[in-house]
Image (cartoon, rainbow, N blue to C red; front, side):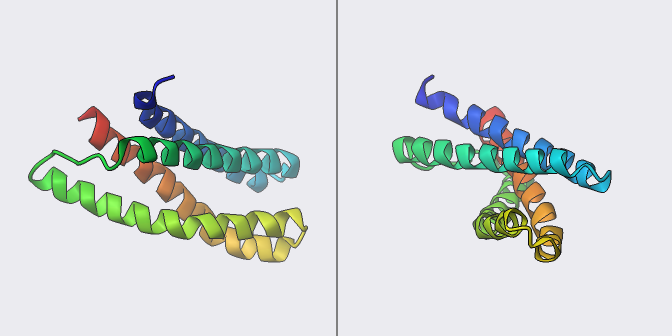
Length: 137
């Protein structure tokens, strides 16, 4: 694998995390607690692998400029800025959410997970949008 392959790997890890989060939500709504736990821990793993790969890529390549113009450029930066802010927020939020679950503090887990899940999904989806706009357009 080359360093230039890492953005695609990152997009795949982001998509995997988003799909696992969605599946985990469906599982808990159906009362399938063990399946929910497995999905959510797998989503965490995919996100940690993403973060490692992302840091390695940007330490080697640096910043990649967006070259689009016009309304697409405005849209890109609006998505990117919200993505960056919420990505910084979601990391500690996810750790707190998972910690409550692992310590079986389910009342606290549920309370914070109601915020964590939609924000984490937003970060996953906007990460894919940024990837497509930066590397495929």
